Image 1 (cartoon, helix red, strand yellow):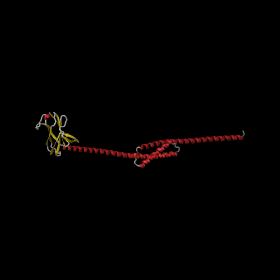
Image 2: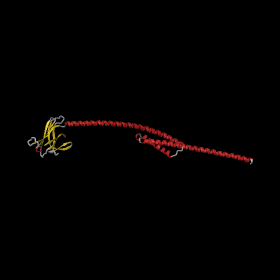
Image 3: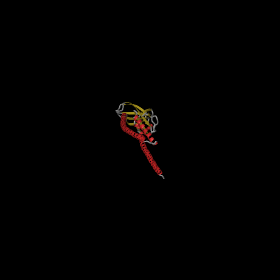
Image 4: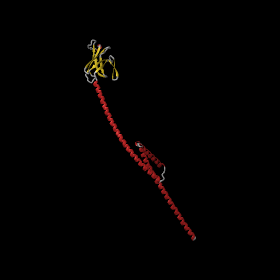
Length: 296
């Protein structure tokens, strides 16, 4: 081998070694770049996942406040709340469906979430304030209702007392009778012991003195019921407790407020039987007295 050949072979070997070294260095650099790029993408994915979680929490907060927006009576504020809520939903959808490939977009999303967090704190503060105000109004309303209930109860008691007083005053005006009696009479006006032979029935009673009873003409109605439950006589009817009540006989007297004796007769026109006879006396829409007599 000539010296020149050796020389060429040496230079060729050096060139090959340099080429191999260059290839190795290029491969290492390329591999490092790819690893760095892959690492950057992995970091972006992690940041995207983290942001998605934060936006998910933020969206839940906005959803939670949805039921309380009724307390926001400011249209402008309500519009801003709705816009912010829509923005959160839109950005959350982007984070879930699109792959973020730039740090710039990650920074933008981080900036947006901070702004949206501040807004929701503002809304929470406003709603809490309104809730406290409404709670105060509700408490005041409950107190007013309670006071109204007490007032209504007092008024009811006053009305009840008034009605009771009026009832007592009305009752005080009622005529009172005593010594109510039923006597069977013969044709000559003397007492008849056998009711079957009676020609006339006489009812007597005493009207007690009463300064509260209006004086003047009084029409007194008498009812006599036989042992068989039949009303004797039935001369007509009078009004009692909004009903037409038949009566046996009646009598008009001039009441002066002083004690007075009253006698009412009924001429027997049907056969009578022994037994219990009920006598009732009415006047001024009151039952003044009622008593059962056993007639033999």
